[in-house]
Structure formats: C-alpha cells, structure tokens
Length: 387
Image (tube, rainbow, N blue to C red; front, side, top):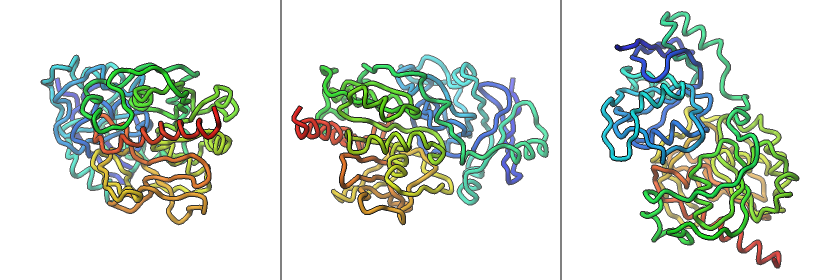
C-alpha cells in the first residue's frame, strides 16, 4: 500500500509524495544530483552524509542494486528524493530492488513529487535545510522543524564516516570499469599487479573505487582514519599519501589541516574533493560555500596545462577561493561553468589535488590519468631520495 510522505524546506515550501524505503523522520541539507546513472554509487558515497539527495533524472531504480557498485560500508545520506521509483528493475547484475535496499539500510525515500520545481527552488535560493517525514504530515509543524534543524555548514561530519583504525586494501578495479580504460590509461594493469610503493590513504569518507585504482596501479595501500596525525602516518613509512573525499564543511577539520601541514614536503601528496579543499586550507587558501554545489557527472573542467576539457563527476558544496591563492600554489584546473578552482599544485613540494572525482564509477572516465601522475610522482620521489 502507498505510504504518504512530505518534504518541508526552511523557506516554507512543502512537497507531498509517496514514501519508499524506510519510515521515520530526518533532517538534512537538501541538494540535487544531475547524474543519469550511478545512483547506487551516490547512495553509498560517504560525502553525502548529512544530506537529503534529490535526483534530477526522472526514473531511478531501473537497474536495481548489486554488490559490485558499493562505494563504502553503508549508506550515509539522510534521505533520497526521486520523481519516479522503478519497481521492476531489469539488469543481469541486479540482486535486489532499490526500495528494499533503502529499507534495509534505514534510509527514507520519497517519490511522486515535482523534482523539477524542487531543483529550481534550490538553484535560485541555494541548498537549504529540510525535513523528510513519513510520520508528521502537518505542514506547519514540518516547516518549523526544518527551521530549528542545524545547518550543514560548521559541522564536523567526517568523524561519523571514518574507519575506527587502519587496515590494508587489496582489491583492484572491477572488470566492467577496468577493461574499457586499460588501453588509454598509462600504468594500469589488466591483472592485479605485485605490490609496489606504499601509499597511505587518509580516509575522510573515502569512496572505495579510490583504493581500487591505487591498487590496480601496483601500489600497496593502507587506509587510516582521517583523525590520524602526521607523526602516526609517517611511522608507516609511506612512499606517498592520498587525501580522500568526504562530507561537509572542511573548515571545522583543524586536525586534518594540521596533519597535512605536517606532511607537506615530507612525502608526495595527492588529494580528491574534500582532500583538495583540505590541501588548499593547509597551504593558506580560503574556502567558501557554493550556492547549490556541483553534484553530477557532466561538469566541464579545463586542464590549464594541456588545454584539454575533461567531463567530470563531482560532489561538493564548498570551493577554494580564487582570490586567496598564495605565491607557492598554482591553479591547474578550473570549472568552465562558474570558473571555480578544480585543481591545485604546490610549487615547492610534490603535492597536488583536484576537486572532482577521477575515480568515478559509473563515470565519466576522462580523468583517470591523474592516478598515473601520482604513481609517477612516487617513482620520481623515490629515485630523488636515492632509495
């Protein structure tokens, strides 16, 4: 039987729909993602912690759920909003429907509302706090709850999604992702290679396709919690350090910024998404909140070194400020939609980062070369050190 549900925003707007997945009531920042595929990767991306995610593509769930596309140990988002839920999935890899998957993981979904109207409101007014409920269906009550709920900015959401301790990683890329890119991806192996240089990946809410890429390139990978200090990480004797993606506002993460400052100049560094923002903050750049963020799989990014345009997958609500670039940092990539910073490199130390997701599954795959550049940096640094 159909279950009613409502989504209320702080501006007083209320959307009515039908519930799927779990029942209950949650609050979170309401944002939207423009991807046509990859909803399972979105659901399992820890970067969505604290958010209610709206999909702009109208039909979601058509290819079901499978274990190969999981990107983390669980679902971190607060709620899931779609125009229409597909109840009859059709794909040879599917093992369960989306409805059951959300129910098992305690995530509330809502369908049947006007997602175009919701997205237009967010684009004009910016991402805003909302309450999604299957229990309280009183409009005034829900709006008041939304207005009393804390905003995402200023919260430390990383500590809620990081692992409790270090662990090793030995899984490579799934063949569906690996095989189409092998020919054009310098350094990638068709089979899982023997372990090479040791990379310590700092997990701030990391997607698992990142260590899969590092392992496929021949690295030995150790994942550590995002709260670790520089001294703890250096004790593992890394050939290089990776800074992962993660949720929310980077500014409260003083412990992470301090760690990166302690690593700069002592080991090569490569960062993605939140890792890009944290590297920037560690180097002296400022940060600001985007009106509605970049969330989708079609963001055009200009590589200023090559002049090539890359179509990228992105998921972030904050960006580095272009008017705060210190003299020892250069901008390597920019977003062609709004000219925001999409990549930086330190001029004095082997450290670089990008704001987007070169590891993205289900794609696009334009930016996989960045992992190869990091692998080459590890080799060059080892040779320079005379090891």
